[in-house]
Amino acid sequence: MARIRGRDTRPELLVRRLLHAMGYRYRTHLRSMPGRPDLAFTRRRAAVFVHGCFWHGHDCPRGRRAPKTNAAFWRDKIARNRMRDADVLERLDGLGWRSIVLWECGLGDRDALAERLRAYLGPPRPA
Image 1 (cartoon, rainbow, N blue to C red):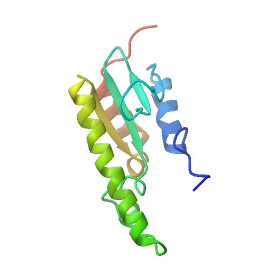
Image 2 (cartoon, one colour):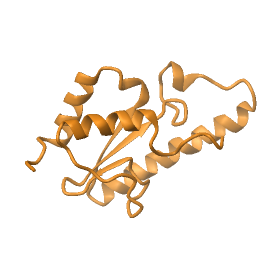
Image 3 (tube, rainbow, N blue to C red):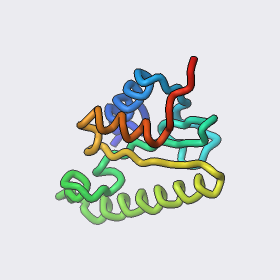
């Protein structure tokens, strides 16, 4: 467990590189925000979360895979993660922030991902 990263994961870095190349600028892991979103666009009041399918209990093959050892612990941990994620999204909404969750399994098609992010964020601001 000590080797599991909570930030700067491979999927998160992929999204960050893509957004930066598209001309977007963002803040990472803002401590002042509920849930410390992976990416925060403060002027747009938009937050982006990049979730790992296993850790956050996504409904895909990787997210549904159950560990063979200590299954009860992992089932409870993933359930708590899902409850916390829902609470964070609700709190951000209450503060007037828009939120989007990108799942690890959905990052394969870069063009579709770029289009989804552009639709969510709007056009990048000129430098």
